Length: 432
Image (cartoon, rainbow, N blue to C red; front, side, top):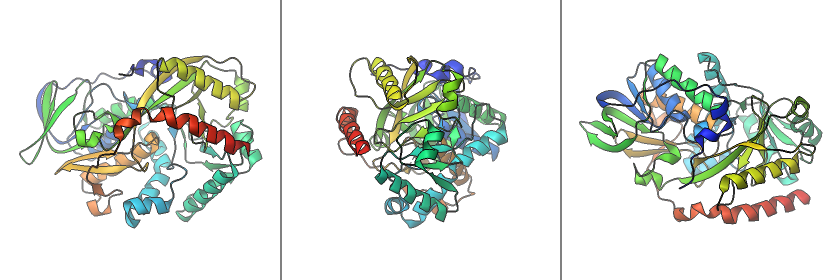
């Protein structure tokens, strides 16, 4: 079992403590029970509470404990670069494909508008999001993505190589897609602030409450926990990669991917004026993406996959500091003062899913490395669906049955084969 690193992250170090949320004790009732207090569960429960629904949110640890509170804090209003409207429509159908693309396009604004409306203290910076192209071929992909967004009325730009260098501080890119609606936040602060807002709206949050069983009962569901139970008319699972053995069919339908992150020591102001001077986060088009941003206290953050093996934190620190030095010449000696990891939930086509596990029992899987923006927007829509403000026929995703992923047990060793091969391909392509 991988060592848990929640307390080692830079976010745990710089974020004010969470407000206490009592564990569930005894039996209670609710209109809706939401299981999992990551962004998706928090936003869904918050909007249900604001709509007057009696909602209970159950969390095994504390809000943001999973991937939500551990990621780099990018607000990315986009799917992965290779995913086109045609891909999405082929996977989900024409109507749902169109709805998903519109939702994704509005997802950055959904985050920052929610932050502004509720006054969430999470170091939100609506500075835009930069996706540089490491080859001419990937620039053409980004140009196609720009054209797709323009047909939906969004304003995104393609930057020249010189503009990309000035905005990134990284030389050698062939251009970039720049989306002004993106940006960055402190993700753990966002989760804790959403939990505060949920309480203010009348929602009930029980942390330190692990759900142990789900049983159909009295036209709804009995949600049993290690300290009590909830009888609810509807249940939504928002656990993503941490569902475990609660619903084995759901667990078998996703690929858990462990991602490591590092934060350097605070760096001089001169470097902050040269590297990402507008403080827009950067994630390029390499297969093993180079992703960097500045933390609120002046540290460079980056991360990604590492080859499985012994001492993963030490290897992540060494690998990612060396990677920063390779792509950002002129850096001083770097120390990875914070090294941590988390597990994201991936689907085989990198698209979100709404799984129907039974009458009144749904699960939403919406991360795929786009956690903050997509899960926020999806949580808002889930609340509309559960309150009847959106009909099922008009929802952004179709309800589908779970489907086991063949060879899923091999996913734990996949990075050992994937990383070296694709790193070599990245270097070959960039050198052409």
